[in-house]
Length: 524
RNA sequence: GGCCCCGUAGCCAAGUGGCUAAGGCAGCGGAUUGCAAAUCCGCCAUCAUCAGUUCGACUCUGAUCGGGGCCUCCA
Image (cartoon, rainbow, N blue to C red; front, side):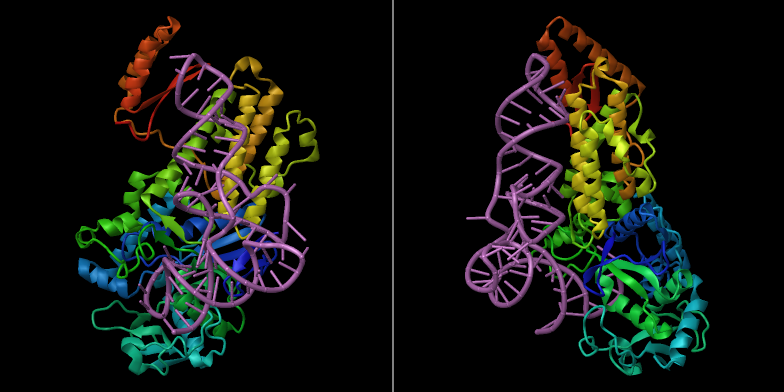
C-alpha cells in the first residue's frame, strides 16, 4: 500500500487513483531563461524516482513536465542578450534537457510548452470569464479571488492575508490579490492575438490548461517545489476547480528545496539576507557558485551525474537538502563502496553485475517460498528482509532516504557472504553459492532500478594518462613488485607501493594478483 | 506581522508511544594481510530545553530557545 503526503490534507493518504491502475502526474517545470542549476534538478530527480516506483508497483504512469517559455524574465533576458525570446527559450530548454538526461531522468512523457498551447489557454480563460470567475480589464484578464470561496486552502491562508500591494497593475484589479490570466502586450513584446487584444498568458494559467489537455480535469499527482505552493499552485487550484467544478489533483506533493550549507536561503534564491557575505567574493560570484547556483553543466564536470542523483535521493524528498561540495564528496566516498563491490562481484562470478536484468515489476521480484528452501546459508533470508524493508520505506511516501539504508545493508550482507564463503578463491566456489550470490545481487539491481541508480558502469576514473603506455608501465611495475615479494624483499615491494600511492595509484593485493586503481585525490 | 516546516552521534540522515533509536561520511579497536589496501566484526546518541498527558515519550500537547521556507519571480 503506497501512501503519499499531500499538502492539501497535510497528511499521508493511501494512493487511490482516479482511474484504476493509472496515474497522471504533473510537475511544474522550469522557466527557461537561464541555465539550470542543481536546485532545478531536485524536482525532476525525485519525481522521476516516484514514477519509477509507481511503475514498478504496477501503475501505468503518465508524467508531464511543462516548459514555461514565455514570461517577464524571458523577455528581459532575451532583450539583454539581443536575441528573440523563442531563441533564448530554445537554448535554455536544450540546456535543461541535457541536464536531466545526464541525471537519468528519462521517464517524462510530455514536455508541453506554454507557447504551443496558447489556444488552449485562451479557451480556458474565456470559460473563466463566462463563469464570472474572471474579468477583463484594459486588455488584461484577471482572476477574481473573491469569487472563489475556497481560495487559499492549499496554502492555508485567507484572501485577506494574501492581499499585497497589488503590484504595478493594481489600478486594473478589483482586488489586490487578483492575479493575471492574460497580460496585454507592451510595445515590442512577444504577443498572440486574443479576444482581449494582443498579449500573452499569465504565469499560472498554462499549468491549468496544459494539465487538463494531457491529464484531464482531475488527475492524480501534482508536484513542485514547496516554494510554488503560494501563489502558483494556489492559483492553479483556483483556475482549474472554478472552471471544472471538481478537484484538480488528488495529491499535492511538494519537495523541499536545496539549501546551501553555511548560507542563508535556498540555492539560487535571493541572497540579501546573508549575514556576513564577503562582498568581493560575491562580486566574483564565488559565493553564489559555491552555494550551488553555478550552471549545472559546470557541476557535472566536477561530480558524476550518479553522485548527484544519489545525493538528491539520500534525503526524504519533503525535507530541505543541505547542499555543499563537501556533501557531494562524501556521497562520492559512499558510492565508491558500491563500485568496489561491483568489481568484486565481477572477480567472483566472472560476469558484470550490470548484466543482471532487474525485475521490472515488484511482483516479478517477489520471492517464492521455494526460493528460500534451498537456502543453506541464510543469505537469501536476510536479502528478503532487506528488500521488504526497502519497499516498506518506498511505500511510505517514497522515503528514498530511509530506503537507502537498506541498500547499504544489503551491500554489506553480500560482501559478508563473499567473505564468509571465501568466494574470492575459485576452489571455494560452488554453483549453489554463486547462485545465491547472484540472487542477492539481483535484488540489489532491483533496488537500484527503482531509484534509477546503477544503470550503467561508471566512467573510468580520470588518471590524466590512463592510456596504453601507462597500462604497460603499470604492468611492469607490478611485475617487479611481485618478484620482490616472491623473494621476500618487502622493502622494495613496499617502496614501489608507497611511491605509487604518492602519485595517486592505489594497489590492492588479492588472491588472483595485484590490482591498481587511480585514487580520487593523490596524497601530497 | 501572518502561514508553514525543522532541531536525532564530530558531520549528513532514517525512524518509532514500550524489544538493542536505520544507514552513510569521519574516527577508534579487532579479524584478515608479510605489511598495507579492500572486506568483515565491534565501539561511538540520555533524540534542543522545560513543563504536561500517559502505566510508559525521542515519538502526543504546550511553552521557551535556535534554524529555515513562503507571504514578491522562483524547482
